[in-house]
Image (cartoon, rainbow, N blue to C red):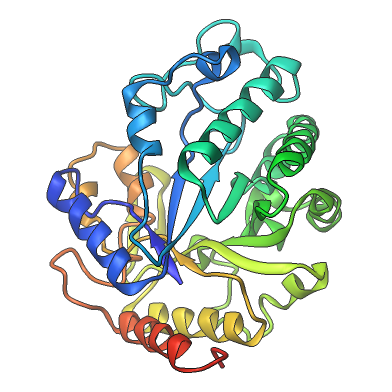
Length: 338
């Protein structure tokens, strides 16, 4: 059970709050590289920027595991990841701005980046695709390119790191076609096909992001995950503890303290019942102070995840935190969770 280190605010204190909570209330830390790849440096074997090296220098405290996620896609899951130079999210330099996802150059650079990250960080779990099936909803031609990139990267990594669990993550709302752009896609067939090159079935789940998800989530909502006959994990998750108005999108996302608590209970009971490998709640702490520093439409985008923490931005625990901590303590008091 664990968290990412998504900061509570855009300052040292906000970073420290998230890190402190993650280390105190979990035994696995998730680090995500999801907004860029140092494409030319990885291709040519050159040193990475200080920012890349600093991010790769993270080590969890003794006794805590590390789950590393790397994505070859951009944040919208529509195309190749941007350039990670002095900062992440930079425009792609030529010729990378015209490379398809399955080009020999992209395959070589991405594999090199993944292998250097493994060597530097020694993760216990590795995702080499993040919410990969969202691309299927948005561009089926590029999805076919991504499948080829994933297959070749997975195969090459496993030849070197046989014992390391390597996989991609699946966004549940798209998989279950509960989002407008996923309707009409053959999510089940395509994800099953890509699962041939995945050691775990890892899920990303934010139920408040779709009005088609029932208010009370059915007990069998994640039952489909057992069909893959592989280990199951939750790579990222969260439920908003209050309604969120997205003015740029003319949309409201609904939630409450009680709904967040119910979702946390549902998720952890399911994980205990089906013996999941791990569960990650994306945020430790509400990030409304971070959102307040941003301008529209970026502020609206960040607001989607602003209230999914286990404590509010004043560091007061929310009702869901008692559920989380109860399962976390029970995990060490019993041979099995449930």
